Length: 574
Image (tube, rainbow, N blue to C red):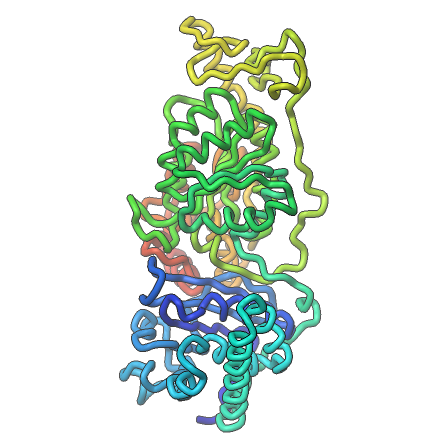
């Protein structure tokens, strides 16, 4: 094999079984990449099992900032037998396959670019398969130009709590991998030429679940109660790890019903609470969501979407819960729905969710998905500086009425023992003082009061992020985690007549949406679901229908290549 050269942007995919340390490889390699001067993006996809199956991680390394998933595989490393089967549509003739002969499927052995390394033999000499992840870390780190000392220090830090023997064995595996790649670089003239930059060396890697957690902390979250459910659990564990530092009470509830009711109790007592769940867990919260509407309580609910219905595909991704979030709960009451497109959005919108929940005394729902939660990229500025927790409750007096009729529908919010007033809340229909009532006129006035809030909420809607042309003939609409992939695809198409509008506030819909879309001759929408839920909602609100819908719902996120091809196909249909 002669002169293998990879330039500017490289995608490494590592495939193996659950339990082989893929997550360790991803996290360690990400830090080594930025310390070497590279931008990095990662995405993990995995089966719903603790051991076995087939999981993978994509580590994308570039000279420029990257935040998107690609189909392209430049280097593929199978860590076990059967690790290649699911990737036959992505492994190309140009892909460099590196692995043990027994891990490489027969169909690739004659016509593809393969570098054989005796993984099984080496693992046996090192004492077993436990250290295969460290060997691969050593191997790749040398390919990327990391120093041996950097790789060793990273391993020592990662395994510092595991005992001297485990640390030493992992370091030996790293050394073996590093030396093995030196031999391959020399023999096969392996050359990776990606421009380095000093600017990224002090960056940090941020995952989606960490972005939501940081936004919650910035928003003053001091109480979280949840029942673990993929893919939302990362937010729960992140806040739990930082609970002591930031004064957060953490409660793992027996179920989602209990979790959200605890959260409502915390808000009633003056706390700032959050629950995090997925679609099935949110379904159990629907009654308490209505309770929040009735008692006009702030509430922040994070939903990490995954494919349904029922248990569906619990470790995969989809944007299938927007309409559930929009219409859940009996009765009519206001709510706000956000869907962050990137990590910066995740921080900013979660912070804003707490302030808007407090200000308008209504539930705020944050929609992410498995792709958003389990992908990462390097960041320099998290944008937390200057974010404040805005509080809207007041000191009450003897005449305090919790549900006093106000012109904007927003009654003064009191907290028990914060003043002399009594703060009554009642899940039954109630009067201004919180007493149960069946008076028809009071009932009508209370419904009107609650709905009246929407007028004020609509004055603060967030416009979609616009990229591409300002003088567009074609408009592409997306929401949530599709944003970065769509923007990279449109940049790759390189036409001056396409604009991309990425919505981060789904409800209430941005006031100027109709004006933005009417300016285009052709409308395209991209959604990770089967029925174009957001497109349907936009039509309902504006009367505007999309000419072309790009939909995906097999459990995987969109790739840059998929969106590029689908947009080009749509444009050819003029």
